[in-house]
Image (tube, rainbow, N blue to C red; front, top):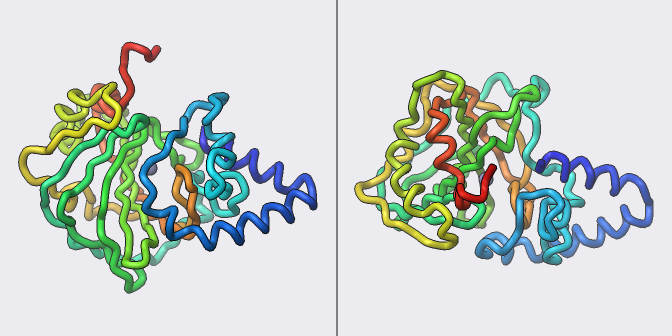
Length: 261
Ligand SMILES: [Zn+2]
């Protein structure tokens, strides 16, 4: 779905020199307003193609969301051989347990730590883990394969630059559950269909448990996958796909299940 948004944008930008110039002007504007945009709360947009606020319209909904259409390094992408670096160092993280809150953001569930929960060091820079949220199905694909779900661990450095660690989930290994999704499922169930509602998590949540240290990863530079689609985001996608049951994947859907087919 989202990949089509990117492709459409590229096709349109290339079709007219006048439009290409307009896109450059918008870029300059975005660069100035980027810092204010980074911390903006989630504004209304839809993931459904054809909706008045669907992916193909994101760039028109707010003036600082233009990159969603005109951007040149937009995520998600298909991970193919070409973007895999061979000699990446092990992930340097010092995640720790902390109190957390689960929120239904309308289109997804987000887990937010209330008092910081450790750091990821990348290219000598320290990023704090702020929040984790889930997409079902996955946004990234690997050699054309889309997975059942994808977890995004969103980090930010002191200049508000973001980096995301992503874990893909598959229910193909029948009967294998995800401990993480099992722990959080009661909160997802309580919050389903209740937009903006929150639930405090009982017991500390330790994200260090969610990173499989035996896994390699893919790395590329892309963007946020939702408005404002800010670019310059370094992505780390674990190459080892995590197990989850079909029921756990279903529990990630934040909208009322009654309305779903
Ligand atoms: Zn995401």
